[in-house]
Image (cartoon, rainbow, N blue to C red; front, side, top):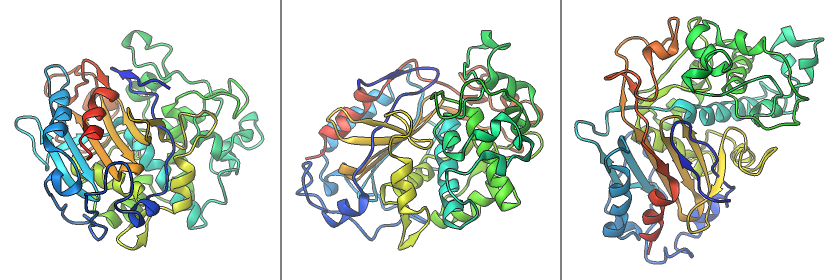
Length: 391
């Protein structure tokens, strides 16, 4: 599979991985890491340890090529954080921003939502991924949509009629534009869509499918998905501050829009790199980390994670978002890389009232508010110097 060039809507990454526990046990094995040191005890629940790249087997001069690519004119990069062996070995920010500056997720939030589903299954709140979605959406009972399973939704294969186009010219045909711009109840809007093809028969990227997962979590926990996330995922790994946007009726927008600084996004990547464990505690079940970062109905997508390989051929999975938001995880290199685009956060409550785009515009549509995309983003050109820096 060749590397993609992404502009408005980032798609098509990432392949599966070798378990992180094996990597930690094999600290100095292979991939040019013989001379590096793995800080297995480092868990940045409160603060990150920051060390020189050379302390972790990386050449700083070569590594700087990633900075040069990310911060060239037109890329609109706000932040890059590179973590190896659980330690920040490089971080760069645009002028006027630092480690405390909010970035936004767009669809990176989908991977957080997947983690919450895995946690809920482990807690016995959900029987399995093979249950009918009608268990959580009673309005589907007795309809053809009763055939849609949780697995179908996690895999972007619900079969619902959905168009993810972000082109403003597609206002009348794009469900994502209709939902974000015009609908107050995002869950009800998606649940009302007709079934276009049999469930599981077609992969089609759909923020609507991920919004259905907000309904799943709300049904089984009795509260908003964001509250469950804070208790079970964000607080246990020390992710703070975090704002997760809601629709106008208070339902967590699980398909997008989680605001937090770049270092906090890196914590989530590290959690998955280490098999869902955080400082000796299982936060996300290891089996869920493995299954959600393995191919589902297509080889390049798992359960809300993208799958691909690095320029050097290492298996990689990542969380991707509109306007160039990335969390890359490369288990064979014990590596997490975060890139966020320029973001100006709305100063008020993170709640769509009534239009999400009025408060969180994308594509640089409103100067001084929302996110700005890169003119082009090529994974290989960004990741190659990072890989080549590893001695």
